[in-house]
Image 1 (spheres, rainbow, N blue to C red):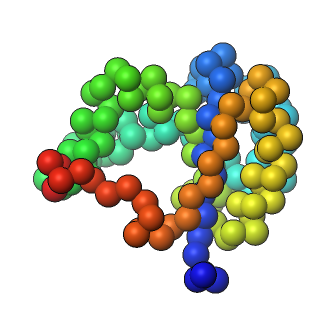
Image 2 (cartoon, helix red, strand yellow; image 1 turned 135 degrees about the vertical axis):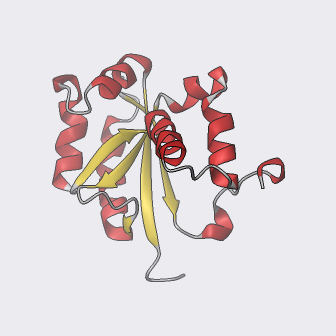
Length: 142
């Protein structure tokens, strides 16, 4: 295993808490989550909102002739995908790094496990930055 591999945590929040977090990630209802994130230098961003933001930035800079943009645009235009990604939150480092050291990811995920099933978090996933194990744009968008 590559010692330099970086990781990212994603949280799935229950419906009510996902709506609150999309409106304000620091909502007082999310104090238990944010206390853990603060401890590890992390913050959460809604995945659907991030996808929309990516498309808006690409469109503003006329950078739309690529697979990632076409794939992302198709995702945000599907109501079923919006329903899925509106509950998913990616944890970023406070300096906006999208991936971080394994130790940070493992400690944060371990502490967040204590909230799993308690009405706020419904699922926790950990990803690494190995391109061979991460989804690539489907052939139709390449």
